[in-house]
Length: 125
Image 1 (cartoon, rainbow, N blue to C red):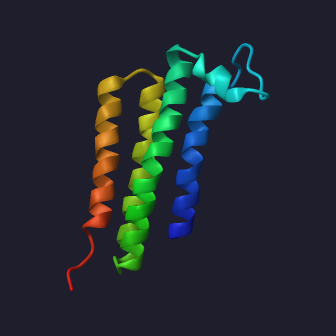
Image 2 (image 1 turned 90 degrees about the vertical axis):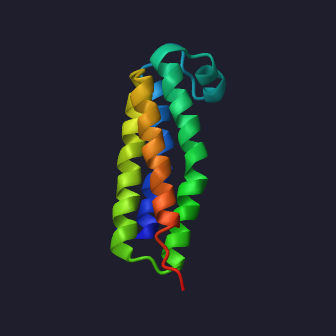
């Protein structure tokens, strides 16, 4: 899987959470989606929070991914770390929506650690 595809798939994750929050919601209007989402509670509110947190997680993932790529880390290693990050972040969104706070925090920590693995997989010259 190319770095470009990993970047693109990661960019889709916040929308998974947003669409989950909006789908079938009473009174949802696409004329003011952010206002509607801000008023949500329960699982819809958590889905919106998952969307926000996932947007916040993207810059570090992108930076770590690109740093590893341009620093000569083995493409296969970048691939596996990138796929792992995507899987853990998707699981994070599901745990967040379902209200599994401890699991959500664990998944967040694992995905954060994967960024570190990407950053520090660079061989010293």
